[in-house]
Structure formats: C-alpha cells, structure tokens
Image (cartoon, rainbow, N blue to C red):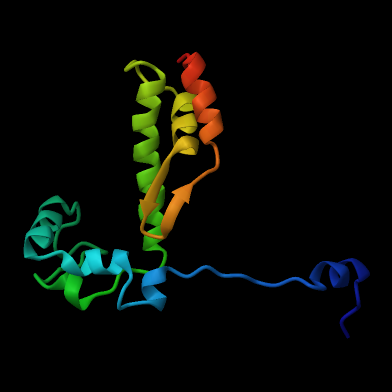
Length: 143
C-alpha cells in the first residue's frame, strides 16, 4: 500500500511536463535548420571525413556516404547544441570588444555570452542581458 504524502500531492497538483522538440522534427518541409542540413553536399562530407578523429574500425566510427545529409536526419537535440556552441563563439567575439583586444577572461566571456543575440537553429536566441552588456562596454571589463 502506498502512503499519501500531502506535500507531494500539493507539489503535483496543477503541474505539467513540458518538453521542447527541435523544429526540424515537427516541420520537415520548411524548417530552416533542416533545409540547411539537407543542402550540404559531398564536399562537406569530404571535410568531415578529413577531420574525423575516429579511424575506420574504431568504436563509434560511422562511414558517411556522399549523400549522408540527404538520407539522414540530424539527431534530436542537435539544434540546441548548435545554438549553445554558437553562443560561446559569439560570446568570445563580444568579449574581445570588452577587453580592447586583450586576452579575454572568464568574466568577460560570460558577459559576451549573456549579451549575444542571433538567429539560431531553434529560433531567435538571446539571454536577456543586453543592458548588462551595454553597461560593461561603458566601463570595460578588466581581465
């Protein structure tokens, strides 16, 4: 017999589980990320083969045919991964502005990431910190 717990009951009353799904899973016909994925050709596959750190026969190695991007969908979550990597890169560029070209610090990089705004694979990405960024630009971040 399971015992009732009033606190758990209160916690779960009115709660819901929300799961975000990559747009390319829902809308395969017009999703910009999937369209760009599909537009990659054999020259992109050649580049990926060249830089693949795994050799044939190693665990995890996948041989990509020339039409890999036309026959395979991106893995679920890859759009979010793309946006995360882009925010780190854009954040580093913005951080360089903050420190007048000097070596960036963790603090200036974080400010740059928080200030980044871009059209990503999951839609418009921003962290709501543009005012913080403008403040930091006004006084420059010390490294």
